[in-house]
Length: 432
Image (cartoon, rainbow, N blue to C red; front, side):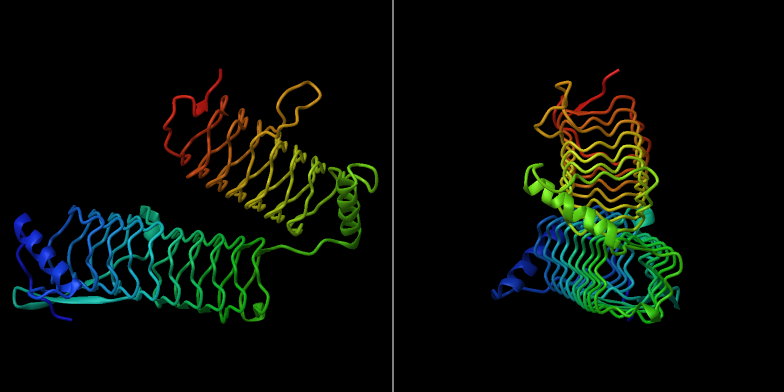
C-alpha cells in the first residue's frame, strides 16, 4: 500500500470531515466517507464518535481517545495507536494489521472478526521508498490490555501478544498461527474450537480457560498454568507440556472424605464427617470440582495449583497452606481463614473474601488473611469488603475492580500493587 504524506488538519477541517462522514454513514445526500490516512491525529478526542468504515491507514493516533467509538470495519492498517484509549470501542471487522498498540487500553472492546496480523506501510520519502512496520510484539509490556475483548474469529499470524493481558476475552474459533503468547495472561479466556498452531504459550496463565475442541498442533506450553482449564477433546500429545500445571482428579480416599463432608453439611452435623486434612497431605493440582466444602479444614496442606474455582468455602480454614497458583475464581470464601498462607500467583478473581455473618467463639468477625503472601495474586473484582489483610504481602497483586469498603490493611505491603480507585474516605482502613 502506497499512501502519500499529508499535512496535519486544523480543528475546523477535522470537524467538517467528521460531519460529512456522519452523513455518509447515515445515508444522507452529500455525505463523504472520512479519509484520514497518514494524518497526524495524536491526542485527538474522538470518544463516542461514529467512525464506522472510516480510513485511517498509516495515521498517527498515539494517545488519542476512541473510548466507546464506533470503528466497525474501519481501516486502521499500520496506524500508530500507542497509548490510545479504545475501551469499549466497537472494532468488529476492523483492519488492525501492523498497528502499534503499545500502552493502548482496549478493555471491553469488541474486536470480533478483526484482522490483527502483521502489516507493512510503504511511503515515499525524498524520492526513495520507505517502510513502516507495525510494532505490537510486546504490547502488554507497555500496558496494553485486551481484557474482556471479543476476538471471536480473529486471525493472528505474528508474534505480538507476548505478555498481553487477554483475561476473560472471547477467542472462540480464532486462528492463531506462529504467534508468541509466552507469559500472556489468558485466564478464563474462551478458546473453544480455536486453532493454535505453532503458538508459543510458555509460561502463559491459562487457568480457568475454555479449550474445548481446540487444536494445539506444535503448541509450546512449557511451564504454562492450566489449573482448572477445560481440555475435553484436546489432543495434548501434539503439544509440548513440559513442566505445565494441570489439575488432576481426586483420589478415591479423598473423594470418599469429600462425600462424607457433603453429608455432614446437608445433615447439619447429624451425619457424615467434617473434612479435616493435616499438614502432611500433599494435594497439589487436585480439582475439587466446585463443591460445597464450607467449614472444611486444610491447615498446613500443600495445595499448589489446586482448583477450587466456584467452590463454596465459607468458614474454611487454609491457615499455613501453600496455595501458589491455586484457583479460587468465583469461590465463596466468606469467613475463610488464610493466616500465614502462601497465595503467590493465585487466582482469586471474583471471589468473596468478606467476613461471614457468623462470629467466632470470641465474638469477632470470622475470616482472616493476616501475614499471608499474595504476591502477584490476581484479585480482580473480588469482594474484599471488611476483609482483614493485616501484614499481608500484596506485592504486584492486582485488585482492579475489587470491592474494598472497610477493608483493613494494617502494615500490608503494597509495592507495585494495582488498586481500585478509592471514592470514599473510609474505603480502606490502615490501622497502626
